[in-house]
Image 1 (cartoon, rainbow, N blue to C red):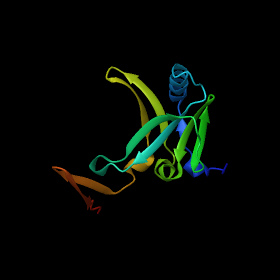
Image 2: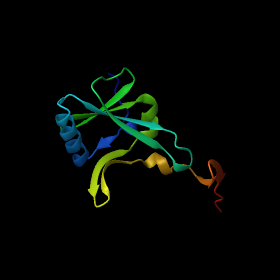
Image 3: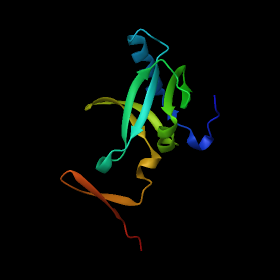
Image 4: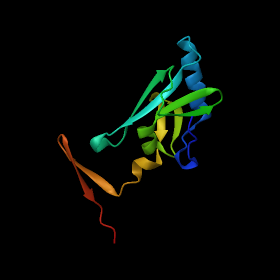
Length: 125
């Protein structure tokens, strides 16, 4: 297993770890790990995909908290470096949320019309 640079660390909150453990238990397999993958989202930014997996692939980074594991492939890790994964319950519902400092790092703003996006550079004076 490769060591992960501190710069590329991803953290799980206590609430996220607790929810992962609950879901794995419900599935009847406490060895399940949460897998997080990132895909480009066009105008809406990054799109995050969550799934359960019982297999760690060669290019996966593994993060742990309170006995649960989070898997992230090498490509997605580049886009998630420094992110925090949380589980939030409120009046709207319950969901895993990604607080990703890389999602706002671009100095570009999307201009969307119908189904197409154009990126324009923001002028800074």
